[in-house]
Length: 63
Ligand SMILES: [Zn+2]
Picture (cartoon, rainbow, N blue to C red):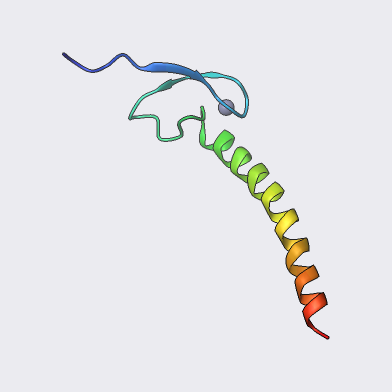
């Protein structure tokens, strides 16, 4: 009944295997860099779609 053995999982960004531990603050990523890359890619994709819709709404409602 000591600590549970750390799980090994693949970093979603680069595929490196990382230990899932409490010490690993970047989990599930292997590093802060991979974390930022993934978040950046995600935010970019999410940003493009809504922005065009907002633009459309304003265009239609302005007249
Ligand atoms: Zn990585």
